[in-house]
Length: 304
Image 1 (cartoon, rainbow, N blue to C red):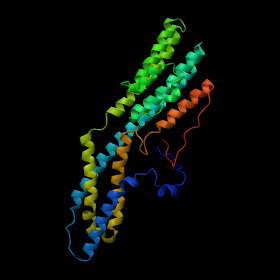
Image 2: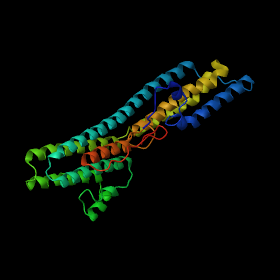
Image 3: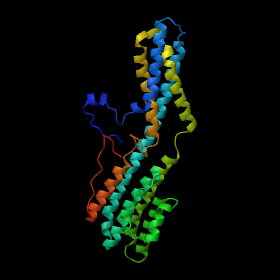
Image 4: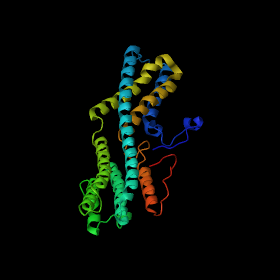
């Protein structure tokens, strides 16, 4: 996720890191070169190409704009839904930190909260399809060596961990360590974490229809490469400038929507899941009275 001071409009104008420009620059330069070549050939009277009919080009542009707007809205909704789910995860972990003070056994509370932290790590790794180091939880989550080694080999590690947290609560309830009311209250947090994971899985496993994305992608590139042929006759030397601006807008929107479509990845505009996981870790360890790690800081305006 890009974290940048927006108060300086001048620096925003010339921003490079975290913008769409580096990704669309090859296609943009190709369109500009085509425009320049057409202008040169036309001015030197090597040939004169008939201009693309304005009415057809205008209709094409209007329709493309409408569908691009729809796609960007759909992709932003996915991105915002992902952020709301992880915001709910932060709230749920805070509720769990407070409500576990009711547990008389301090060791039991520590195991429960360390498993909660491990859940956030595993959920992030599942969404990003990666395996990060979880060795720091080996001695604090109450698992023996064999169980801990098998965590990452589960079909759904984060779901398996929630199941173990649920079993721990059931065991405490059956042994009389907690009452049915306490069990019910703590169980609500387990259900909330499960709902959050299900919501994230829904976003991860259900992208926008592939055919729709391909259709729009092809339409955008077709429109941008037709631009010089449509504008050259009327704009003359200004053709490359206007073509560059219009192509940057359409190519940029197409690329930006592709980034927002998958909000849990590692691209510039994806959600800062590492930072959220560290936040949960810092707040939990503070409640437990343990050493608190430093918060993650943005590098070149980007927070992972």
